[in-house]
Image (cartoon, rainbow, N blue to C red):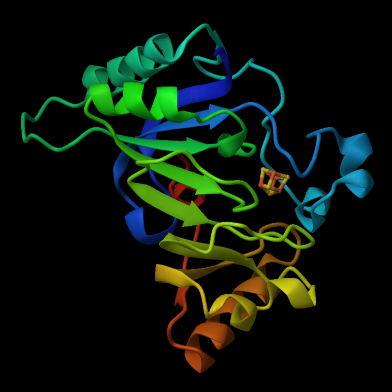
Length: 220
Ligand code: SF4
C-alpha cells in the first residue's frame, strides 16, 4: 500500500523513557480522533482534539510526501539515519513512528521493511487500535473519551491532567506496561499541569515525570 507522510526527519527523542536518543521521526498524516482542522476541534471523537498541538495534516513537512510502497519509505528513513550517524559504534538505527495516529498506516509490510533496514521500531500511539506484530517499543498515550485496546507495552505516557475521570492515572495501573510517565499538558496551563504531575509522582511513585525536552533545547 502507499503511505502518506507529514514529515520525516532526524532528531533526538524528546520524551519519556527513550528521551535523548538519536531517532528518525516518521510522522504519518492523519488521526482517528480529530481531523486536524481547527473548525473541527469540538467535533473530535477524542477529548484531545481540544488541545492537540500537533500538525499532522497534509504532506508538506520536511521530507513529507506520498510513498508508493513500504520499501521506498523504509529506504528514505534509513538514508536519513546514515546521513548523520558516523561513529561506527554499531548502534542500531532507531525510528519513531508517530502522527497523528501511526497505527492507521503502519502495517506489517512497513514493519518488515523497516526491520530489513535494521531499524529498531518504536511507535507512539493513542492505543485505540491494534498494531502489527514485531514493533520493538510500544508507547501508549491514552486520550479522553478514546478507550484503549492496547493493554500492554513498554511505556504508558499520560498527558496530565486531561480533566476527565477516564484519564485519571489510577484507571491504567492494572495494565501491563514497564514504564509509567505523566507529562504536563502544554499550553496556557502548563505551570499548573506541571505542579499536578509532580504531586502525582510524589503520591503514586510508579509514575515518573516526562518533560518535553526537545522544546527546552529547541529541536523539532
Ligand atoms: S490522538 Fe494525538 S495526534 Fe490525534 S488528535 Fe489526539 S493528541 Fe492529536
